[in-house]
Length: 203
Ligand code: URA
Image (cartoon, rainbow, N blue to C red; front, side):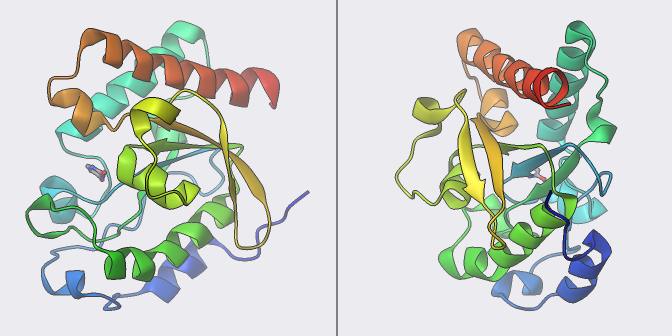
């Protein structure tokens, strides 16, 4: 059994008032992550938006509200003992890129080690990675397309050699931007597969 080598608090303390890339110049708040430090599931998004930058918490804007609804109603319908407050949520980037532009390479390289350490310290049963850019980063393939890989299990090896099951799915922001009902259903389906794995298979 893998025993995490450091606590989330230690990772956050090391990140500190981070100035490792240019995003510290434009951010209001650094958004480290939110949720129980022993959560069974870690959710990974791309980067804080305007609301998250203001509040210092991940997924608190419109995309976050949709995410909460998706988690809570899928879990309730399936009888899984989980709600949004039970998962650990974080982003690839801890600071908001100006005008929500896509993350740049230097920003991702500065932040990635912290994401890896965060995940290792929570040591979840599974990871839900949302959207193209977070999936590309975590799975190490810059060309992958979320619509092709979503819904199927992948794997992420942590720096300490621990393998974690990864379920890629659509980012809730994309679902808000006029995705079809069919695509929305697929995203809900991905959550069902995730919860069933964590609570019915490995619990
Ligand atoms: N989109 C993200 O990827 N992360 C957030 O925290 C909010 C919106």
